[in-house]
Image 1 (cartoon, rainbow, N blue to C red):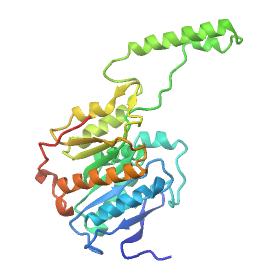
Image 2 (cartoon, helix red, strand yellow; image 1 turned 45 degrees about the vertical axis):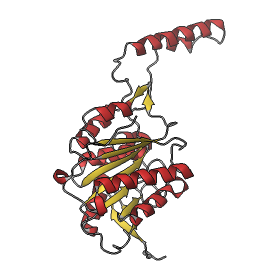
Image 3 (spheres, rainbow, N blue to C red; image 1 turned 90 degrees about the vertical axis):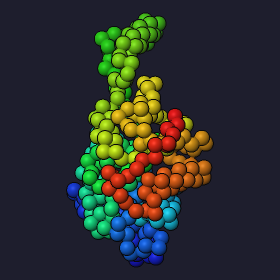
Image 4 (cartoon, rainbow, N blue to C red; image 1 turned 180 degrees about the horizontal axis):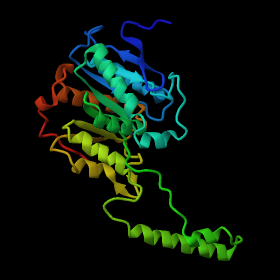
Length: 304
């Protein structure tokens, strides 16, 4: 099999425990020479391969390359063509930033190999969490594109003594009454939680978000209206757009008619449009700038 065709090439990058396969989509009119340009690195979500659902990542990477941004799709350890097994609890691993070291290593190798001036990180859902953790840790990240990020952990409630008792009562009216009482106790407990932040908030992720945006990184968030953006009815997206960010640093777009994966026709086109417009505004002509030299668009409007 050929490792290179006119517009793309296969790469093998070093990971913490094995090889990380990658596909390089060459920036148009800059084939073989990406020096000084900003690259776009697409990280895995929970989709099994770097192509993502419906080959959506392939299409986005191709479009970014056509716009002059070298794009890279990778299979992090445990995904696709990588030669390592996934961790036992994959989503928990991602929720706590388990892929940070591997992603940072990939960035450093791409910077050195293609002499890029930096990378913009792109991630969907769980992949967006890996983007935030990596952006906070990497000196070479220049921006974040987050599709349907979430900031809450699975809610695992501890049973009350009354709830434990229910399990030992035979089915019938008494058991139903005890279960109703147990649910009322749980509801009262939840009402007394701090209104600012639910109990299942991913506080570690929010800490890394604050660290990443404190660098001045520009951020584009694209959401589908049907996605699970809230935990315990708390609007995390609204919270992060108003907390620890400068004016115009975070842009938010909500795509009506898109599904969570953005792999339908409307979603694909909308992600392309908004990300290309954002890339051209923040990194004109595909060229990187030191963060201190970036002039953020103070007129950018954050839409909720």
